Amino acid sequence: MTKAEVINAMGRPTSVSSNGNVEFLNYKLTETSERAFAGIYTDYFVKLFEGRVVSYGRLGDFNTTKDPTININTNSTENTAVKADSTKSKIEMMETELIRLRALYDKGLINEREYETKRAQIIAN
Image (tube, rainbow, N blue to C red):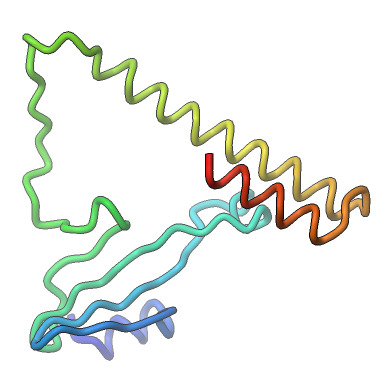
């Protein structure tokens, strides 16, 4: 896929950066309508080499060409499943807090400054 085809399919990127023959298109997208309502966006990137897509994905999980298998070390003292559930529940709790905060703002119970301050605190944690 070419850069023009990506932009045609996804729209204009939020930002573009490049280094030699490598170019990155940055998109800020929401994954659900609730996240959009709460103003929660996720960074997605498209990596192009010499004008053609070579990989894409979220920030932190960017390279879609990596090996998708998970290596589970049975000698590990950490329970990977519990750790993953803990991370997921933290994200879900943050999302719930942001949705509730947005509802307070929309009802006029808090002002914009209070909303933005609390929103920044929630996201920082």
